Each structure stands twice: as structure tokens, then as C-alpha cells.
Length: 222
Image (cartoon, rainbow, N blue to C red; front, side, top):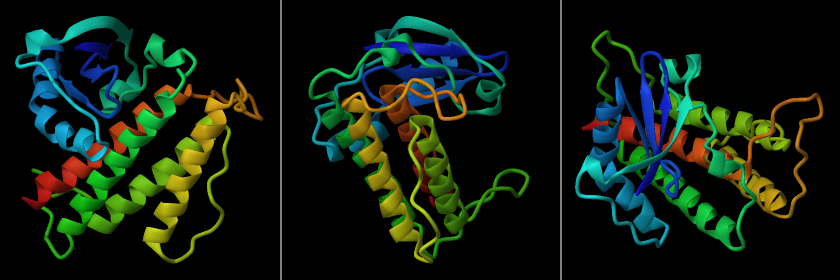
């Protein structure tokens, strides 16, 4: 299975090129590979929700590194930020349907984790830190609204007062933006010269973020 590595000074990410959202970090390459493999069963549930067959390797040696990317301060902070070369290629015919299904699977995983954690006291970190469930949900929503600008797309206006409705509207806006990208309607630069993400990388980044917090909720609610 082809993966890429994003190498920061203190942290390294390993990501599966064909499976956006399946991306984990470690202090070095060996640790990142192990973390990616350890999360394969959890990602399998996402692929299952998307209706896709998923066959990860049996060992970390089954990952083939096809690209190494330099990381930055964001990498060391704890989020992937480098764009694999293959993500810059134009979407293949029918690819958006697969990416959209995987993204929907990631959202479903987050929703299921959040619903299961309602009324549950989330375990704190070693120093007593960690957002509460509603704050995590609002954080994910805010991030996705912000990510839309990376496709030169405006987030839905206003706060409806209903968190679930705001999430639904934002997710629909994301799918609309991706459909526009597939049609070639997204400019190469933003209105003020901002960087526009390739559609494939946009899905990768959104999927990673929502799954990272879905799995955080699961772990802290256990």
C-alpha cells in the first residue's frame, strides 16, 4: 500500500495516498508506520461506511513510501500540512464520488462517536486538559468552515442556533465546493492571492481532522 511521509523536526506523519483520513503521526518513521497500522481497524469502519473494500497490510513493512515531504511548524505542532504530489493532479473521472463517500464515512464516524459520548465525562489529559464534547464539535465545525476558503468557497452565513443544522449546512457547502472543483470552476488563486488547495488534498485534510477528533472522543469516552 502506497504511503507518503511528512517529516518535521519533532514529528512525522504517515498517510495512505488512496485513503484520505488514514494518517497518523509518530516521533520517527518507524513510530509513524506503526501508528498508521494500529489505526487500520478503526479506518476500516470508515471505509465500510463508505461502501468500499479496505485491505490494509498485515505489517508496517507492507507500506511502500512513494514520497517524502518536508514538514514545518504545523507538522511539529501536530497537524499534517504538506501536499503530496499526486494530490495536485486533476481529479479522475468518477473519483469525486469515491472521495465524497469516504468523507461522508468520516463524518458519520464523528457523529457516531459524539452521539455515544453524550452524557459521558470525557477523560482529561495528564495535565487536566481537553475540550468538552460540545467544544470539540464546535472546533470541528469552525475548522471546516475555515477550510472552505481554501477552495475559494464561502461558508454558510450566520449561526442558526442549532449546531447540528450548522454542521449539515457546512458539509453540504463542502460537497458543493468539491463538485465545482471537479468541473474546473475553482480558481488557482484566491481573491486576495490566497493559496487554493487541490480538491484531493482538501478532502485529505478535512478527513484527517474530523477523524482525529472522532477517535479522540472515542478514546476519552472509554
